Image (tube, rainbow, N blue to C red; front, top):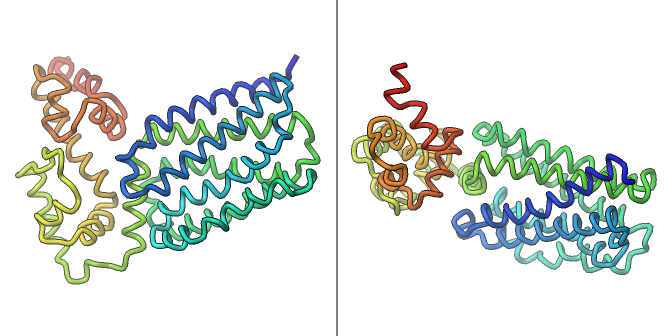
Length: 345
């Protein structure tokens, strides 16, 4: 009979595989990774690799099939850290994208040499490679410490993933002290816990990758606002949103809004990021949600779909997703809580 730890590992192995499929379907859509083909492709490869590891853990822990000692498992283990690096780098350091493309072979090298490594060395070395990439991530996040103010909740959850990654690296380096199934049980639990935290984070902030990219681009760009009257531009932006209601245009984009204000795209992006503390995508969603909230309160006969479409969303699913992200509830629940009948009680 399996121990409680093994049972939990089996459960989280299955959860990880289904969680990966959900993340692929809900997060890795083209709209979240526009002009980010590298990051999207590597993110999908990362999810595939982690799912493959969890499938091998399930086979070993539940079916006694020793897939964890096969060559495909070893190569997949070595692929996780480079895939994560190549997924994260375009988002966290967009100015370094060209060197990435020219150095793909170098990042693939751990996977390519893994078949020829001695059995006793392969597993610890895979975690040493992972620890190296983890140090790189620590450095990147430190460089972006000023931009983390807009992502407190998300950074707390992803910080949990970071702690898990450190624990996994330590666990892998000391694998001899926890041999056999207990080691793979702990490893499977760690991956499952990381999936849970990532899925929770994306559930709270579905457009996280877009917002991070916008904040990072503003952070690394040299200031473009030295000759811009920021106060006047923010006032003009407010007029466009509150009086002209240009957010109702479903095709409104950063370049088109910048043109209306007489700014460059980079200037408007920096203005919103630095002065308002958020990316353009988040700012636009908040404007639309504010207008939708007023309609939900004041127009009880209007359908939820018509409200969403009238403020600039292109579908009911996009409206629900954005509303839940900003307000923490569905539009229908908000209307019920703030209807005139409820408020008069």
